[in-house]
Amino acid sequence: MRIRDLTVARSNSASSEDGSTLLLTIFYGFLSLVLILVIVAATSLYLERKRLFTLADGAAFAGAEAFDFGAVDPGTTEAQRALTGADVQKAVTDYLALPHEKFEGLTMTQAYSTDSHSATVSLSAWWRPPVLTLVIPRGVPITVTSVARSVVW
Image 1 (tube, helix red, strand yellow):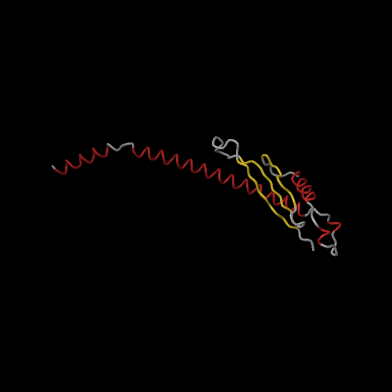
Image 2 (cartoon, one colour):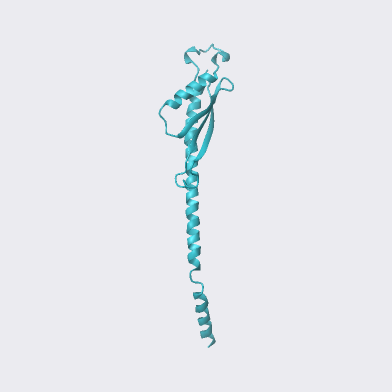
């Protein structure tokens, strides 16, 4: 009789825990969904920054090549080949006017030459999350800076 009493007691205790795994499953499902959405948003932000950085690299390269090549000959001194901030800004503005990938709110924040041989370009744009637009409705500003140096032999 004792074995029978034990099996009845076990079946009664097991039935009192019904539904507890359902709540745990719902919680872990929600947590997994939130984690996936955050990873998608972070990946989108990373890729948008890389795209903007690629555009800034091209603009810096265009700014570093802003001096007049016709005036450069092998006997020209370094002082005669100097970049000016106005030349860099004009070259970067012309480069950004060409058709490129679209960025929301793309602005050139800085374009200058610090040492008369290299061009520094800073660009900024807005990133909006692809999925979590209710969390960050305005988006996040992205700013990148690129430096390019021109070497003339």
